[in-house]
Structure formats: structure tokens, C-alpha cells
Image (cartoon, rainbow, N blue to C red; front, side, top):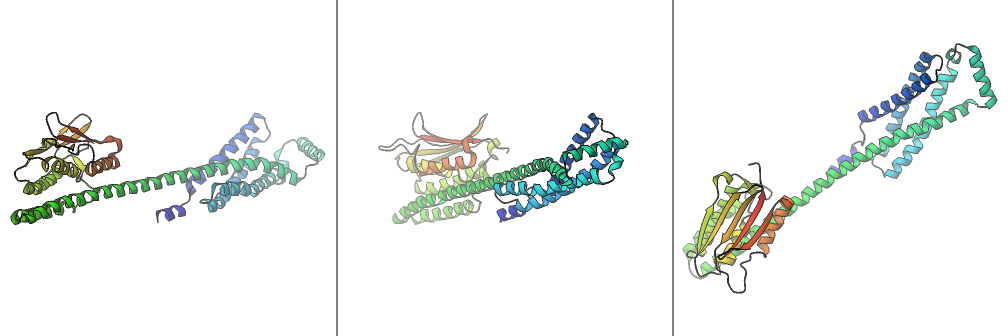
Length: 374
């Protein structure tokens, strides 16, 4: 639809075309008048009046050429150039014929006060053997290149318009692709989380812990009611994102009642900062999966944020002891890859994710997001 609408629009509008035509012909009239003044031609007033007539005729005929070239607006550039060069031929001859009539046929004796001067000019023309048609042809050659100069300007303006339109279309497609990528990455979060939660729920049911299973189902329903009600492309405040992760931790606390502890430290000044929805979800899941689930001791999962000169830093960390054969998923895994892909699609090089081992024990994943206006 968008492309079809573009094809119906002229590359060069009437107003711009008219201004370029008038500008070209005014420049022509000024140059010719200046040449006549420097050459001290007689009857400057009479010549100027007739020159105005020729200029007006030239403007009209060039406008006809413009209307003709518009039919080739969306053709290949080679076709447009060919049409311009061919169509300029009759236009140049028509202008030359009008010029010849105005200056050589219409009351020619009035051009000169000295009859002898007019007679000498006539004799020279007879000696040269130039017929009226030859006069017109000679003038048409000069007018042809003048008309071609305007036609090339017209084609250049039209081509520039096409380039701008192509850039806008490419920008729309790039934005659509980015939105599709963001939706895809965002939708990867919920199935991954659901899979883990259903495994936990299944474990509770198998163990006969029905009350805890019922509580988990209710918390799960509440979590999904909130997470699925938002547009995948919409951002949320940091306070809303942290609150959603708090609900998730409540779900996991039912599974690990004695091992999972939480700590949330979000300064009030940062609570209204804008972040991508569910951007913390894979990080919190990572801390649960690689930290809490493999530990026999209580593990604290912490969510904190701080504002630096260049970024908003949001960290998710745990203090679990490292287990044999694992690295707590600090640098690899689907969850962290998803977060990195979302950051790249959303912010480009302005945001990043790091995952490092703590000095004592445990791991910390930190988001570096560009400052928002809020």
C-alpha cells in the first residue's frame, strides 16, 4: 500500500517545477540583455520588450515539456534521460521559431532607426545564403542545450526525491524488522519461564505438597496476567519491572522456602526510569537456576540499581557457592543471550550486559542502560 501510494505522487511538484523554469528563463533573459547592453545594441527598449515575449513563450513551452516528462517519473533513469533528450528537440525548435518570428518577421524595420543598417544586415544574410529555416535551426541548437540543462535539473530533482523515498521505505522496513526481532526475543522469555515453573509445580504435586502447589498456581496466574497484558514493544518503569520480578521470586520461594532469600534495593530516584519489560526476568531466573537450586545453604538473590554519569546500572546477584562442573551460568546460556540480543536490538551499542564472579562467592549480572528522560 505504501509503495503504491508513492508511485502515484509526482517526483517534482508543480510549484518547484514552475520556479525552476521561471528561474532558468529569467537567467537567460538577464544574460542576453547584459550582452546587448555591453555590445551597445541600438533600440535597447524595443529589444527588451520582444525579449520578454520570447521569454514568456519559452516558459510556456518548457512547462509543456515538464508535463510530458512527468509521464516518465517512475520509469528507469535511462528511459527518463532518453525521453528528456528527445522531447527537448521539438521544444527547442518551437522556441527558436517563436524567436525568429518576434525578431525577424514581426515589424523588423522598427528594430533599427538607421535604414542603412537594416539593409546592410539583410545583404550580409543574403551573401551567407541563410534561409529562415536555417536561421531557426541555428537558434534551435543553442536553445536545445539550454532546454536540456533544465531537463537534467528536473531529472536530478526527481532522482533525489526517489532516493529520499527509498531511504524512508528502508527505514520503515528496518524499524519493522527491529520490532519483529524485539517481539520474538520478548516472547522467548515467557515460554522459558513457564517451562521452569511447570517443572517446579510438577515436583510439588509429586511430593504431595498441594497447598504450596496451589499457592504457586495463584502466583503464576498473577504473574502472567501482568506480563502478558503489556505490549512486547512497550517499556515499563523500573519500579514495575522490579515488582514483577518480586512476584516471580515469590513463586520460586514456594519451591525453595528455606534456601531462597531476596534483597531489593532500588533508590526512589530511579523508580520511574524506563526499562524494557521483562529485561530482568532471565537474570533472576539464572540466579535461581544456577545459584539457589544447586545450593544446600540459604542463598540471597539481590536486585539493585544505581545511577552513574553515563548509565543506569541494574544488577542481579546471588551469593551461592560455586558447584562442581558449573559456573553458575555467569556468561553463557539462553537467558543471558536473550538479554544481550534484546539490548542490541533496542539500544545498539549504547547498552550492554556483563556477568562476573563475585569476590567472595556467587555471581552478578549487570545491565548498563542509557539514561532516559524520566
